[in-house]
Length: 406
Image (cartoon, rainbow, N blue to C red; front, side, top):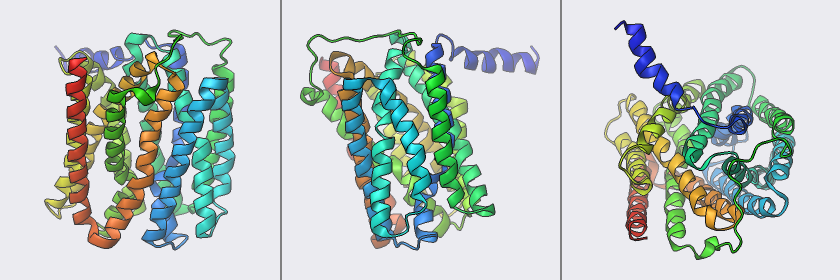
């Protein structure tokens, strides 16, 4: 067998096979997500923008990122309520378009108070999109394809993120931070236009329309609350890579914005190449969903612990690799768990609570990380983050035990 045939039969064919069976609407949702996320190059550089261009101190940046998280919580809750009342399509269109306008305007806010307010409003509108998108994804996916459909959406997100930080770093180097806000806003508006053209609910084919006569309240689902608590902790851990970690790369290892963008872009590129085959393989394995999420949390926590093992700059790549594999496991299966659980209740309510878990992580994760770095330094902060990961692992272990009994 030639090398070409080996690659074709054992690498390319299985990779392409992982995408088979997904609906046309899911592919359109992925394209819309890619267009939107390709412009989110502002987010990884937000902490650098606030400290370098606006001269805010770390304490101020921490509170601004808390406003980011509060807006995300309120937006996720609002998005869930609106999705159950007016439907996912209207919520997605309104959210995407207004987010584009607001991102363009955000660059003109200069004071601490206005930036807190602006970030809050942007996230309030932007994150109302997420519960609606998850409900749409569930409606357009066959039950057996939901995890892979979620993974395809994540591939679109990470393909956008892999290009975004690298291009963002180049824009900052050659132009300025202001260009990032324009790109982000314009791409949101383009995504809105694509959504209107291709996902009209009168023409799109619903594959899993769920109607529950007597829905169970998500607020009474004990296992789901343990799951939400674990995801909140995981979010706090994971989000350090988009707030304190860029500062660590710059201040401790003296990386440039472009190098930081390339390193963060590696995360998205690896996910784009490896996640779908990995998920398809894990779906057929003997491991439970809770067990897989537990494994992902272990790897993500380890990505911080290894940073304190040596001053060698190459350890940054080891850290991002561990985090990437952990993320590839946790996010698709946690999404699938939430969507499956939502079948017995109001879908908007369940998916809103799922997104709120990560929004709460935004409130506490960014601020706590900044405050710890400011007070105890990066090394001790990574030890604290590792301890938080142990609590996350413990909750997922409890969840696994509960699910085995039901």
